[in-house]
Image (cartoon, rainbow, N blue to C red):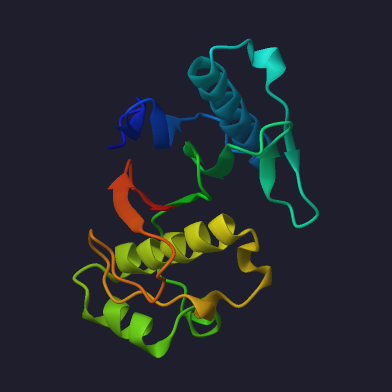
Length: 187
């Protein structure tokens, strides 16, 4: 799916989701954030056939972004060094992208269940497995609107390949790697 071009599933005239990726040169959080917001606004304006100035992104009290005046569109934004990812859907969506680095055992016990740690241990690439699980967790927490402020262990993943298996009956998940970044989509 990742190619800088839209990926999406369409059903008749309705859309289910669209996800976009872009490589970015900026290293600072601010530059990455601006690039992600610009990509989201550009793609939303194209999708809605309107001017980019007509798209206003706001945040709710928990920090979840939304399109002002459009409660029929759910959005999610993520960025990491070198890449941005945005998604929008007609139902709750969460996207996350993280550069694959070294497994962070110091965080693992707080974020992952023992079963998830076993998945990492059993994988052929522990770093990729760690960040795949991380992005799966974060995409879920973004879709439900809490982020990591709430318990990350409320969702548990039983596989790291598509179709991803989890204890969620409400959401489905996709995951992959793009430009040395793990990414996940919860919708």
